[in-house]
Length: 187
Image 1 (cartoon, rainbow, N blue to C red):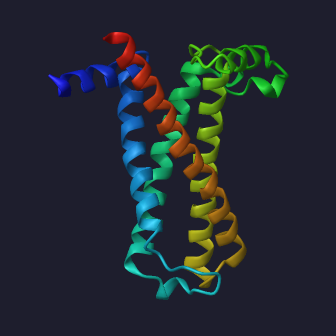
Image 2 (cartoon, rainbow, N blue to C red):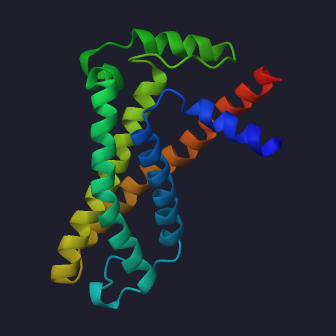
Image 3 (cartoon, rainbow, N blue to C red):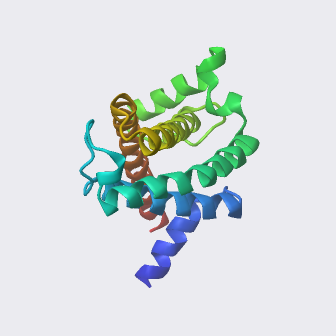
């Protein structure tokens, strides 16, 4: 009974997404989690030569390279459905829906997802953070594997990874809040 309720809640969270986005979202979630876990067992520093990095670091690097095209397909699918103006409304100065969403949050309620709203904007920023982490990692790999080291690129990559890790945990937390909200209202 409880397991079927969990599945029902997860289905509700993703009810508006096309199946391809659900699959890509799940794949990227698991893959990013694996990247975060493997990064904790790497010992790559500015002066570490590519030839002397450990197996975990190589798995992490190759995993990131494989995740890049999957992420680009996901980004394409999301932007095709939501549009750039929906996910990055601040680019055109359109922040009215974001302001309305913040007002709703200030009353300790969760706003419904709206075009050009806070949820869409946060999703857009998360996609940018993921692409940034993957591109900086890929560039570091290309340079380091050919010349031995790339200390500045490694630092840029490590900094950009902080953005996607923050997004990963915050996005998961928001999903959990929405799930709890759904669970309470379903009873």
